Amino acid sequence: MSNPVSDQEAKTTQWEAAADLVVLGSGVAGLTAALRARELGLRVLVVTKAAVADGNTRWAQGGVAVVLDGERDEGDTVAAHAADTLTAGAGLCDTTAVHDIITAGPAAVAKLRGLGAVFDAGVAGLARTREGGHSAFRVIHAGGDATGAEVERALVTAAGEHGIPVLERHIAVDALRTPAGAVAGVTVLDPDGVPGVLRAPAVLLATGGFGQLYQATSNPEIATGDGLALALRAGALVADIEFVQFHPTVLYTPGARGRCPLVTEAVRGEGAVLVDVTGALVMRGVHPLADLAPRDVVSAAITRHLAQAPGGVDDHVYLDATGISGFAQRFPTVYAACTTAGVDPHREPIPVTPAAHFACGGVVTGIEGRTGVPGLYAAGEVARTGLHGANRLASNSLLEGLVLGERAAEAAAADLAAGALGNPLHGRLPATVAAPVAERDALQRVMSRYAGIGRDAEGLAVAGSVLDLSVEDSPLWTHRMVEDAALTLLAQALVAAAARRTESRGCHVRTDFTERDDELWQRSQLIRLSPSGQPVLADPILEGVA
Image (cartoon, rainbow, N blue to C red; front, side, top):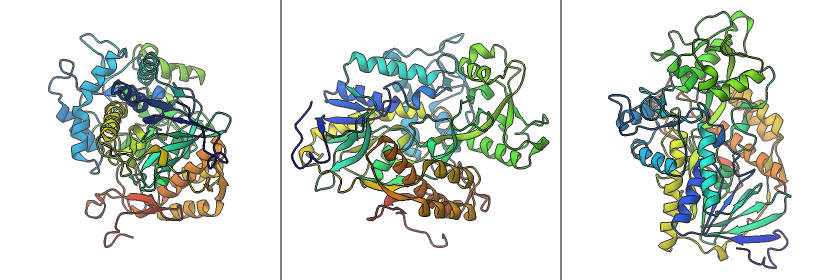
């Protein structure tokens, strides 16, 4: 796999490798793609920032939303699942993508089970639960509340059995481009920061989201959006970046920063209710589904409730799950986190608060994972297929990763066979290895305060000014600097998109424009990089829209 490095490149790269497909990321989308690519006979190489089993997938608790033949609620259908997805997406889903991906779900789950994934058994067939926004019990789960860990275990085991090479603790920096603009590989830093080149006619981004843009998140430390930033620098379009889903319930501990333990939505699906410190029901009169309303509704309701500081408490509410029998057995991951924090869910309500959870937008792709840049593909949370719209329906993310991971590998194989991709030997290194970087702690503070749940023009203007004044061009010579450059770029892009969208829709809540405006805003906003490297809104501004 190794190739000698040319004299021209020796100044900036010290090692090189080659493959037919380089997969960036080792979660559900990345490993599903790598396994399918190997089946299709491609030389595949997986690059991951941490250990192969780390990443967002292993932290997914709830499950996989899917309607299986012979294992469904009476009257539940794939069409009903699609309808729930469209409702949650608040008018911005791509209807064709929704029906296509949801319809492909049962086959994708069957293949995953064929790889050894074991889901929890019920009285008849697989156990199923219901989560917010779902009209039926259709979420299958593993280990009670450890579905992501089981999915990742099965995929990592299969990848090992198939001998798929993985470069652990390597981070991708930028894409190689041919003179015609096709992607032809990536530059990377090894665990010691030594720069190298991976040449390949196809690169798949499966790098997850950017929860670390905020002070509190359910995402691991590696969720810094570097794949999304790489795509922008490679010429790809990004859409719907302003729609960041905040999970309504992470475990609250005073002063918590970084990754906070998730309290899965399935707890509410089993009957838990949200209350404030006085015992008042948070969701009473807010939505017909009450505590099982879509996530954006529940998160916004909690935020509004806390603004009134009931009982003098303005930073958390409580999830009363004391009525759930066998809580420790049904939700062992949540129970362990609560016990560590000194909370007994059997006897007392769980203190919870919203936290950044999932990026509904991302690199614009079709339902086969192709971006607008030849040779560049995307799948999973980093991609924007049109499935999620303005708000993701609970437990649709693992499903999307399974379906799009496989399809992206098939698209790359088909494009390679058709001669539609660039020659990796013609791939050129980026002209510069520097990018604007803001100090991470300051960035997270300003994004959490002004660009979280509840945004307004004044706050977004402050956030934009702070970001503009605090950035400095820095060379991308370390893992940390690559991540901070990505967070800086995405913060600028998100603030610009959020400021332009003068309405409230899905995850995007404006306190100064509280209503949904379908006449002007039932559309996605596209973002690209300007020649100077700044994120700019690429879609035409409609008349009357500032």
